[in-house]
Length: 251
Ligand SMILES: N[C@@H](CCC(=O)N[C@@H](CS)C(=O)NCC(=O)O)C(=O)O
Image 1 (tube, protein in one colour):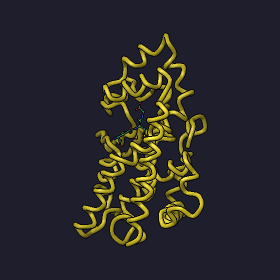
Image 2 (spheres, helix red, strand yellow):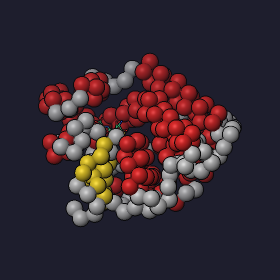
Image 3 (cartoon, rainbow, N blue to C red):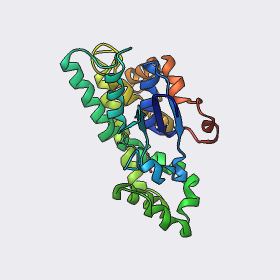
């Protein structure tokens, strides 16, 4: 472990994609530690010492762990002045932070249930009758223990998946509306607002391509295409810079 920046992350994880996108936009090198989330590597004691919530991502900078994807991307932008990703005007910065909050409060909530459902079969070993008790006992927060317990018992209900789809439409409509004014979500340039939101729009597109078909949400689609065209996108979303990437699922 020599690089000043160490990233503990998941290949398919939206929150990890957010951080990888930020690191590549800033042109920063980092050492990768991919975790297999369906093999519950995020609950290993050595990882919990870095991230007591037992979730990815975690960035370790010069030996100090930073958790929470939105906090991490702001931290990166604060530490490394090249290619600034926060607008200069205080009002635009406030908009940027509101988008970051929305990405966590609504966009993340829109995608996690269908995402977990899709990857559930990979977790079956750890959730099988005999193993489940031990797997669940290692999960540090009640919220995640309940979620994994639900997975062990058969997954999310049709109503919960439907609620997620409703939230996806809310996200798409909000992005679409915001882009009536500008090409980017906060201010006149690409910022952490776009960085925080694009993994969720990408995931919605993956889970429900029909929501973006037939000429719907055209401004959001053009925004997504603009971000995809940036070199950082491919590096972050089709991440290959770790031998483990070949053995893990991506979405
Ligand atoms: N608020 C946290 C959420 C992190 C999170 O939920 N990470 C997911 C992957 S996107 C995870 O680690 N899931 C595995 C688990 O919950 O056991 C952040 O933004 O960093």
